[in-house]
Amino acid sequence: MKQKPNLPFWGLWNLSFGFFGVQIAYALQSANISRIFATLGADPHNLSYFWILPPLMGILVQPIVGTLSDKTWTRFGRRIPYLFIGAATAVLVMCLLPNAGSLGLAVSAAMMFGLIALMFLDTSINMAMQPFKMLVGDMVNEEQKAKAYSIQSFLCNAGSVVGFLFPFFFTYIGIKNVAEKGVVPDSVIWSFYIGAAILILCVIYTTLKVKEWNPQEYAEYNAVAESKEEKEDSANWLTLLRKAPSTFWKVGLVQFFCWAAFLYMWNYSTGAIAETVWNSTDPASEAFQAAGNWVGVLFAVQAIGSVIWAAVLPQFKNTKAAYAISLIIGGIGFAIVPFIHDAYLQFIPFLLIGCAWAAMLAMPFTFVTNALQGYGHMGAYLGLFNGTICIPQIIAALCGGLVLSLVGSHQSTMMIVAGCLLVVGAACVTAIRHK
Image (cartoon, rainbow, N blue to C red; front, side, top):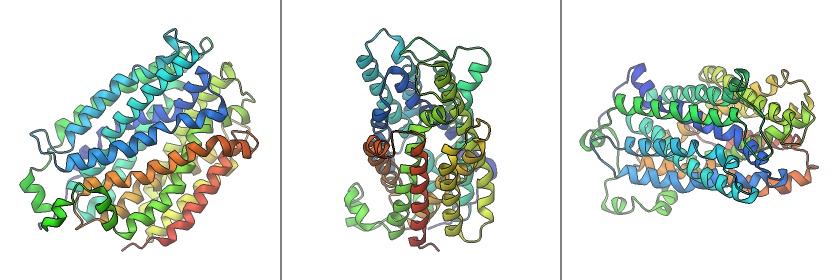
């Protein structure tokens, strides 16, 4: 097997640039889904159920995309066709979802329309997101892989900042941030429109700049399973899981607690900030919608903190220690959210939360892709590894209403729950064995 060549900085950049646009779409979804459904009339104890669809679509779509793209060879590439189709679908759905309350439907019908649109949105985002991880696994050597994922992390966070700030920005320039009861404000609707336009432009850029290897070149640079039995088992996910290295599962355990924590952040942050800073629990009120905008700002602060911490992480000599410390810092950030009643001082906990997010974006895939060298079926394995992101979110969403009731029905207290989950995840890092 030939050594993969070192890629120039802009070669690594182009592999992941489209992720910037995909992440804008993901950020708009993460910051506004609870706000949209609360505006449509959802009860806070039921909000978490709306968050089951995104990870459920992820666990279904990403392994399929990974497995199919492992076998796909076209004149446009191996992974890129899935990227382009997913992005094009996401653009269409982003123009429909925020209008769920503007179609003259009854509350139940508007929520059903929103749920269907959300299902298609997350399906398409997952379809567009997975190829970027696989492109790095396919085309980047071991020496540059951490750098490549760090670039991807930077673009991810830059896209997040843009997506999170859109509603606040559009409100600032005069677009209405309030609407009649059950209708999503124009500031949110236009955020989705502009985000969709940027998404498709970024993906077009990647498809024009990245030239994937043909089958012969790929075989020269990537170790693949050679035995007949392994080739026959290539599409058997259970077989792949049975043969997965232990690192795959140990990193997955850490992922379980981390992604459950962030599911609760995305789910309950709008209500938590509305309670803690604006003293409001009425989704139709101007105060609640202002809190919704401010949550976007706080999520942007979190993303900025993540970019800064991503530059610090490579300075750690012990990768496991860096991972665990990052999660503990994020846990502390979550835990202090309910005790800060000033909107600007909330920047502090969300900067700390950004440290955990930086580690979650870069380190798991570094551990796992390194451990998978020589196993073959990289796309299928990374698709299956996405289950360690999706399953904890599904479980957390199913339990969200119960946990909220147990902590006194205060959405702000769910931030403390999230902090505790991150600390447990940090403890689990010690089980990872990494060369």
